[in-house]
Each structure stands twice: as C-alpha cells, then as structure tokens.
Length: 255
Length: 197
Image (cartoon, rainbow over all chains, first blue to last red; front, side, top):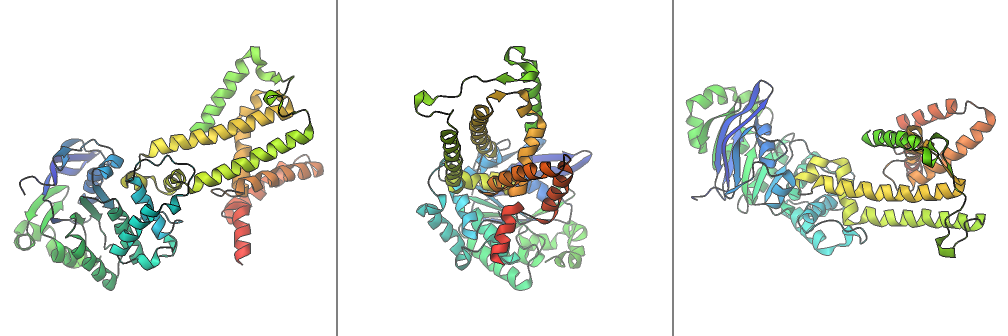
C-alpha cells in the first residue's frame, strides 16, 4: 500500500477568524476503513465537505489515487469514484426509493440530455438500482416513496445511493445519527460487509461503532489531527483521552 | 428574482426603442401566415391552433418530465447539493431547462401577438410576470396540469369579479393568500386530496 487511495496534505480552511480545518494531513490506504472522530465542532463535517468538493480549502492538497482533486468540482469527483452520504438525510423525498438510486446510476451512465424516452423504463438503470437496494436490504421497499420510509431505512437508502455510483471511496458522514440501538447494530453489520468491497472514511459519533469497525482512527480536535493510528493505540493515547474520551459518556449518548 | 430584473431591463430597453413604437407599442397589420397553410384571420382556425399548441406543449412537457433529463431537473429542484454529489453538473441541466421554458414562452408570445394584433413593452413589465406566477401558484406548482387550471381559474375570476366590482384585486389577493397558506399544491393539489378522500 505504498500509494494511498486518499492523501490529504496540510489542508487549511478558515471561516472568518476561526480555523475549522487546521493543517490536516491524512492518508487512507486502499481497502481500509478509516474513522474520523472528534467532539462536536471539531471540524469533521467541514473536512468531509472539502473532500467532496462542496467547500474549497484555503490551502493544502487532496489527492485521489494520485490525482490532485483539490479544485475539481463535486460532480466530477463523483465520476472519479468518490461518493458520500449526508449527515442530515437529503434524499429526494417525493421520489420512490428505487428512483433515488436509479438517478445515481443514471449520473454515471453517460449524459442525461435525453428528453423523450421514459427514464423509469431503462432496464439497466433499474437493475443497477435494484442491486444496490438489495445490497443494503431494501429491495422489498423499492417502490415506496422516500417520505414514507422510516429514518433507519432512509439511512440505508443513503448508502444504496452512494453505492450505485460504484465508488472507490465512500465518505460516510455520521451514518448512525438518530438511529435506535437495533438499527445501529444493523448499520454496523452492513458496514462490516461493505468494507470488504470499498474503501471507507467514516465520520461518526458512536464510539462503540467506530471501535468495532475502524482499521485506523484519526482524532480531530479544534480542526487539528491530534492523533492517528490503530484503535488500540488511540484508546491508549493520553492526549486523546484528555481531549475526548474522558468525555465519553456524553459522547456515546448520541448513539 | 434575477429573471424579474432581466425582464425589467428588457422592458426599459423596449420602451426606449422609438422605431418600434416605444412606450405606445406596435400595431401588427398582418397575422402570421404559415405559408398559407393556416389562416389566422379565421377565429376557428386560430382557436384550434392555440388548442393544438396547448396540448402539444403539455404532451411534450409530460415526456420531458419522465425522461432522464426530467428526472435530473426534478432532483435539482429538491436538492442541488445531493445531485452534485452523485455526479450531475447542475448548472448545465438548469440552463437547458431555462432554454426549454423560454422557448415555450416565446411560442406563447407569438400567439398572443397574433391574437391582439398589437405588442407593447407592457407584456414585459414585472406585473405580467407576477400574473403568470399567480396562475402557477393558484393551479399548483410542480404539476403538469396545475398551471393550466390556474390560468383558466385566474382569467375567469378576473372576468367575473371585474363585472361585480372594479376593485376585483381586493378579492383576488386574499384568495391567493388562502391558497398559499392552506392549499399546498394549489387547486390541483386540492383536487388530488379530495379524490383520495
């Protein structure tokens, strides 16, 4: 793993006087599940937004498979194999589950300047979508409008949408947020399967989930990476304990 | 908003063009002939041409809405960031959508000019854009037949109310407010909910 799939170097992003991302460097190897943890306001979502291209960094570089993507717009990053899930579920509510996923498949199947034939009847798009739904266990809910899905199902659908773009790297922004304990357990199981197929960067509050899943963990505090390493090392790290894990009860309360 | 601003700009430019009548507008002495195929001086033929344009337009939009392009545009309406994230260059699709809408408005304008035998900058004034928005909101945004229903109801109401009082806008205004506040999806939405019980 000489060449990491994702390499972030000296990333800086400011909001006015606040440095939300302070000289962050991060390597994610191919096939690894890399968790990013940190207290509220540590800049986790700001970091994800820069990785996906919704927000431009003030300095630093982001490389995907060796290619510099620091200033590449979001939609083209998706074509390069970067997919994300959103922290606040942001599916298309009046579409059915399968419509949402098929649209993601459509985005990666040539351009969409077709004005006449019915997109819902394009068999290969529907099949790709069904396969992705199957992957997250939602096949039986394919024709249900998103607004009628439970919160847990919506989070799984988020994953299916990301998977339908056939990503190399999956950025998951708090996939367990707002899930009950059974739903959380299902999500952990699902991620355990997915990690065999795709490299994952997981931003998560739920410490049990993070320590169960991650190969490596980076700890973000006030926009800085204060530690990065295997879960056992992170658990032992004095600085992390002081900054973060000492506060663990408050943190796991979110999960 | 920016569309309104551009319309206002076009209005003032047109008002300044003395050669084309400026503020007073321009009388059209001859209707479109379509190479002699259709005679627009005949009220009946004109009517059927408009009807054909209406249903042709609705059929066309219906095809577009369910096409790949239509799916993308609907996605953009509800969540642009999501569409970018799954790989759609949002602004290109939005631009083409504007072009299609503009073309259809252009056709409507051509028909209107033929009907009234007269054009003036007033049709570019922002109140006209406002009228169109009222029709769409009244009928139901984001639906195929909503705007058509809205246009019919709006014009009928204007006609009927203005016979009762010259301050017909005083009644129309609150009515529109009620629709906006309580009738999500306009008249078309209400009809749908009634049918479902």
